[in-house]
Length: 98
Picture 1 (cartoon, helix red, strand yellow):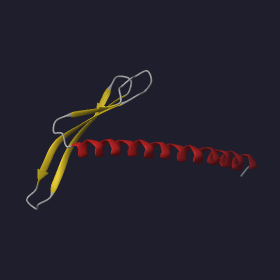
Picture 2 (cartoon, rainbow, N blue to C red; picture 1 turned 60 degrees about the horizontal axis):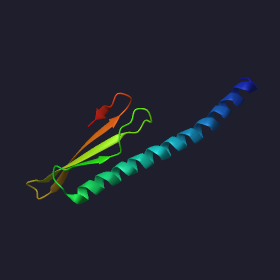
Picture 3 (cartoon, helix red, strand yellow; picture 1 turned 90 degrees about the horizontal axis):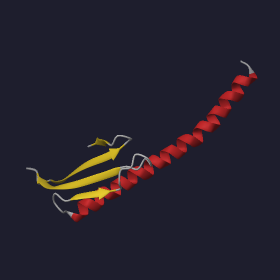
Picture 4 (cartoon, helix red, strand yellow; picture 1 turned 180 degrees about the vertical axis):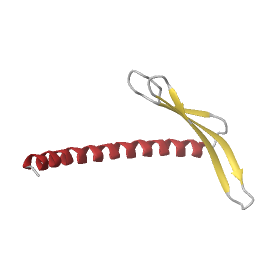
């Protein structure tokens, strides 16, 4: 192999590793923020009250999250589940993900 090949490969590896680390940190921080918002709504226990976080803005890329606590479900095996719905608005045309 040519020496130039190894140099290009090592430069590429040294550039990609920091980018991957930074993107994983950003994703983890966003996920942690969303979990904290969900826990906040679940602790309040206000049934059918929508909670809005952020405001969707296509120019700045800002997203919006709406959480709704629907209540508590009891199972036959004495387990309890809290039901929470989420609507995330994002993108240039205001796409939503439930």
